[in-house]
Length: 180
Length: 365
Image 1 (cartoon, chains in turn green, cyan):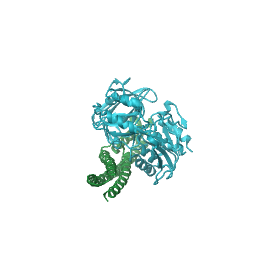
Image 2 (cartoon, rainbow over the protein chains, first blue to last red; image 1 turned 90 degrees about the horizontal axis):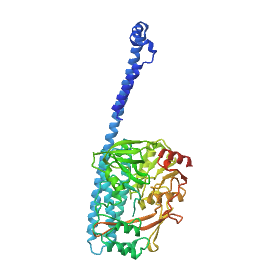
Image 3 (cartoon, one colour; image 1 turned 135 degrees about the vertical axis):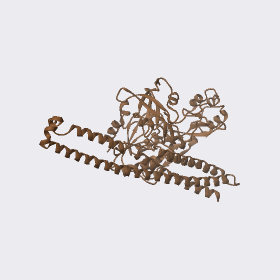
């Protein structure tokens, strides 16, 4: 439920509560109201409604603040997704460079072709993982997941990217050994 | 190495060509002859032909199959972003059941998890096979489908579900977070272990629950995945160097797998299991139980501790066949028998997560 919907619900609830009143119903209504003018009930009700209006204003201010906070959090989350996308792009560039070197190795005379093939196979796995990172980050913006789950998904992607980075480092080492 | 999903059919991917062109039979025979876990009978190999190839392959190896080049997806790619209703389909004796994913269209339309599917757009699914039902559920992003389901407490209800793109969580956190229930549906190579770590960190950061309090891992909808991911995930909960199991292969091949170092979690574990818990999920559960790190609640699992591998054929198709068997630390396997729970529940209870959570809590130390 958005902050706006919550606000409208609260306002509606407030109005209904106002109609219901909390005094003896026999003192309300037209006749009771007229009679009550001299008895002080009218002043009481005005004060009560003013107080209620003040409460609603306070609630609205609180909701406005929360909405602002949510928007700040949302834009911060979007900025983090943007940073994640930049990291993925950088890693993909690194992987492309590694693949280029691996291809050069496979055409090199005397290279251990079995190990080069193993390296290429693992590189393919790494590339698939990175593609998933990319598509998952793209999907996060239009995701049907709730705010907390978007945050969780982003953290899962981050940890998975760390694992992929370790795999990349390992393959880099393998590639360097093969090149020597 | 991939352990093929046993029962669930994912309905969130687009249909692909099913036809198989003339498969290179001699290459298939050669691969099976040299690499199948248990050496095949030569007469059975000779009997392989284009006519009912899949059936004849299954006679040799119950998990062998040919996958067309168009249909094949690598294990890592299997958990990509999807377009669909955001649910898995499990075929049961009582009818097809929907496994509803967090954040997907079905969940947002209010479809309860693990409900029996009765109709798609007004047409009964009674007697239909998985592929026919799945194609009725698939469709373009933005389109809708009307589903009629049998509700868990009795009665029926219809839901209009919008098909859409979504990226499922690799490890789901079942709300409310402070009840500490996470769900694993797939053991995706290189992905599930880091996703589990991220989820446990997230739990510690966002809920008031004690990080050392018992954790419940729901494996009821986990039909398999990557074998090494199952070992890696089990290794998160066991000390470095602990024997996780042995991978047995042809001609005396045996590879012991031990828990790696790194971050460890020591909270008590309860695993929810059922007949759809298979292969990698069974291996994960079996390892933790043998080391007395987890107790199992639910029903006996599927019973498949073998592992398959994929070989690309010259026509672009892929042969999947069994080449490994996993033995638990005590040397036994789950193949054929499955894992029996420490606390067994009835069929109705198995589909009621909240009831299972209560039973699991009662069982926790």
